[in-house]
Length: 245
Image 1 (cartoon, helix red, strand yellow):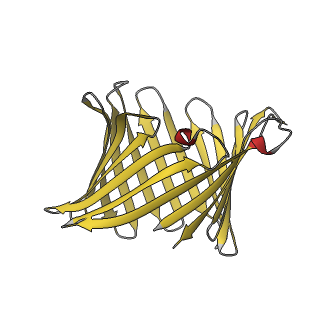
Image 2 (spheres, rainbow, N blue to C red; image 1 turned 45 degrees about the vertical axis):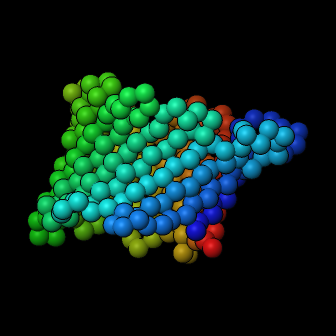
């Protein structure tokens, strides 16, 4: 059984604890025949007289094997609106180094929203993956080609209208730097540094935001700071801790 406690600090000015937005996530697992099941709920932990408004999300996953394929299906439901569910299906064939990911919505009808497939190729000490993706709602397609060798990872994403490249370089045992360049002229730089048993990852996107993620054992803190030029225009903070019992 897993219990995750999370506290978000909302952007704004508050005279009391109204700026805190604590949530509690609970999950459990079981099995039925060859199917492994996991399910859970996410609820607000803010004091309120409206108990029915506390649950936010209900979810469940099922894992099984079909032939050479490992299949996982997940459903997420809005606890305040149970009329539809977001569905994700993943199928993985380790022998063929092939995986398929599908996103859909189930309600009055079943509709597929996105689909992608990933094929991996190993060559000597390097690895290449090719992932074509298609969004059925927008009718947009792109492909992600990733190359990894030693301390260097390169990822190229290309569609008909936009392209980007991310180069990730392990500088030493504690530091990794990953700049991303887009055909639109946008640029971002990610710096990951190991700190003790955890890590701090800082991502700077000029004229957009500074994002910091600090992981330390069971604790994770996320800070998002929108920026305009050199000015920080706000801050959103999230802190969570996982408790297993």
